[in-house]
Length: 114
Image 1 (cartoon, rainbow, N blue to C red):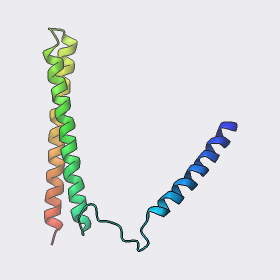
Image 2: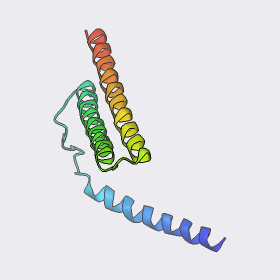
Image 3: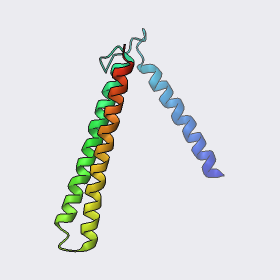
Image 4: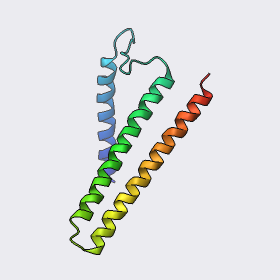
């Protein structure tokens, strides 16, 4: 019970401090900078999608390399060979799913866009 009260008070104090700090950072005319340099939500969503697909592809490539390294250093041990092959297969399946989902989103966007 004592820990709960201490955590509650800590959150209250931290929330008050951060709320005061955040309100001091807003310019008086509320003119926030446009960091994405985009005026339409569709452009923002498109950029986020592009970066997410790039990140997912990078992660899949890392897992593919990991599987290849496991297979390479297996020295004939069947468990390492299986582990490496499975990592490579699932990374390949992940890439197919990533690119298929991107293609579907792109196709849907082209159909919906006036």
